[in-house]
Image (tube, rainbow, N blue to C red; front, top):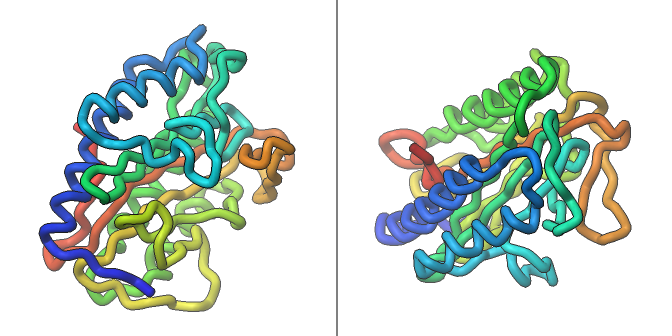
Amino acid sequence: MIYRKSRYELNLMKAAGEIVAMAHEAVRDAVKEGITTLELDDIVYKVITQNKAIPTFKGYCGFPASICASVNSQVVHGIPSKDVVLHNGDVISVDIGATYHGFVGDSAWTYPVGDVSDEVKHLLKATEEALFAGIAKMQVNNYLEDVSAAIEDVAIANKLGIVRQYGGHGVGTEMHEDPFLFNYRTGDKGPILKAGTVVAIEPMLNLGCDEVYQLDDGWTVVTADDKPSAHFEHTVAVTNDGPLILTKRD
């Protein structure tokens, strides 16, 4: 069941999203050669808690950290570690959730470390473009699959693999609510978008094939061909005035 948010609830979600945005700004400034993913996790934990919010991911289904930190061929759900050190040419997807007054903000971004290859730059640019193409379709009386189609079109135009086992999702008092958002067409138009519907739109595109698998840690998802992946995400509300990005950064 899709639960549409009131204006009051959207304001709380926007406050949660602003905290997530602040955490991403701190990560953006900290990502460099030599830093560990555990150090990035510590930075985010401090930003979230100092703003009187709760790290949504920490303890979620047993997840041990405040962020998901996925490096290079890791797609999503990477576990921060003192043993994972960033190197020049890497890319890292950092997924952050914050719960403020019972409502969740959720956003991911993929950051380059130092100088990355031209093909990786292309991957990052296209995946970010896919995110905003999907956001543009978050309009009253559009179908949910209009969002999926916009993401797929960008992926196909840029000859990138589409992660098919994972996708976007509704957000509210829970991190994962209805509806589920595929990053490609399924042939099912899905629900009609109404004002107050909130969805985390998160294309995950690969430099190689579509296929991914989960590691033995029970969390980390990697590409089957070991090629880099990118992941961009915003929490977005449908309003009568158009899409409202709740996790927007400066």
